[in-house]
Length: 351
Image (cartoon, rainbow, N blue to C red; front, side):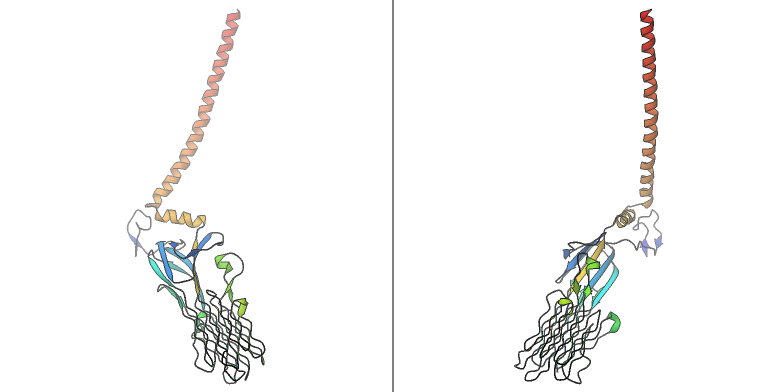
């Protein structure tokens, strides 16, 4: 129960009503270079601290770490599946004025010969919000579950990839592999990974465009990695997921793309899976005129005082205008009187 004096009222009786439309103020991370109109924002590409200096609402968009791609099986054509993209969550939350530890989900390592990749790690905003990393790209060994599914290994019977840990996060499964051949593409939070076709690896699923949230041009995060293939490796999702390897290791996803690594393929034991990309955390603040006005009326000791001050200045302006009009009339009347008197005096002097 909030003390009404803390909310800007004169009386102190308690109330459960809070100005929920008011956004807070915070520091930390790196400022958005070109935020949307009416907003500013902070990006966290590594672990750090969000310091909330004024409590209120905050928009948060964050991704877990991308998973590593699966390794190929030496002496065969069996290829590893692509790693799943990191999970995504977007929410508007109320944060009190204190510090919050930001944890950016680490990327999953690529799998070695006949080994699945590692799943991506979760990202956190204190204990308020978190999201899982992606599921690992599959090989013949055990795989790691995550918010999205990893691609399947290129062998009949491996048809599920690294399954979703929970459907709550809206992630999609990885694609299926081709028998004795290519691996499936990793899934993402927007689509299922592509299925392998013969010796061609499945493409990684597309990532999520964050530009509407942070401003600027199109920028995708959380894509799936491509599956490895004997002839053609699967493309990484949205050009940010790692590509599948052909007689080589899968490509790694870049840091902070939250995307999966590519699956590997090799008959010489070097077809390791590519590492995933680490996650990222975005925190957005509203800086529009309406929010500033709401914050002014909320934080001033008395809302009645603010309203009274506004009324006072309006009346003062009106009074000044009225006074100015009256003063001008008096001056004009006196000027006319002087002119008339001067004219009469000239007439008398001539006589």
